[in-house]
Length: 336
Image (cartoon, rainbow, N blue to C red):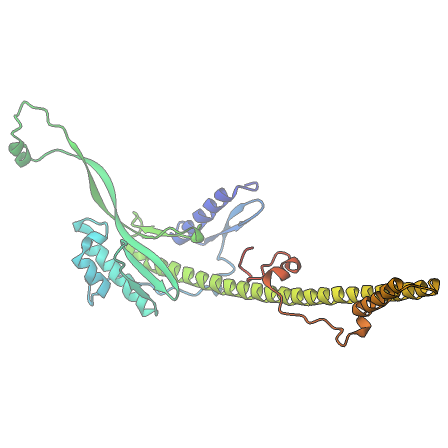
């Protein structure tokens, strides 16, 4: 397939994953594909064992007993409130057995679960990750005619035509789903009864998917923390550079002002000397002007001061903005 669009590529990835998980490949073959994210997509059915199969850890099979032994506390709550799971009464006991096995094995692996008051189903918890899990029964719409008792109650005569009514009934096929979240797009989230297998036989895959998501979440969490730390370091480095440049500009400005003052004072004194020489019989007004000019030259002459290096106070955030570029003086995630 020549460079398919992202949705098409994702759909093929899901199909490949489902074919592997559901055992649809011919015995002694495996699927190999190229172009998972970019470029042309090429899928091959290859004879023989997958070259990485020797590295895959075997999964411990999870069996669902025919009767519930020790009832899990959450399952006990569901028994009292069966309306929280969408199954018919005929499928309720089986659904509870599946959930009881799933929860027991999930907690045996060091995880936890809870039944939230404002949500249907069960929330599976692993570390900081939470996964909404719900079991339901597939439904179908059938036409049903009223029973003789119902006809008698309605006083329907034999010559009247009776119309069937459409009713939604359970099929006995159970479905277990994980709540849809975009961050897991492309991953399997639904398992159901089929002609070739039952939902009970898929609990191992359900647990594997939950653990895989938890591992993925942990990797993403660590990557996020590392990225935040890197951004913090980059921001702090930028702030240090900004403070240095700010201090340098303060010094340069002070030095420039001192040189200008020194040159200006020298020029004023030279002018006073020339004015005094030109006015040998200068009157009192000229003499007073020359004295004021020399006093002013002393005031602006930096060589007459005791302190030359300027004091540099802590810069304000707005003082640092011109030196920070894309960074904010208020932190790596702040905006101007």
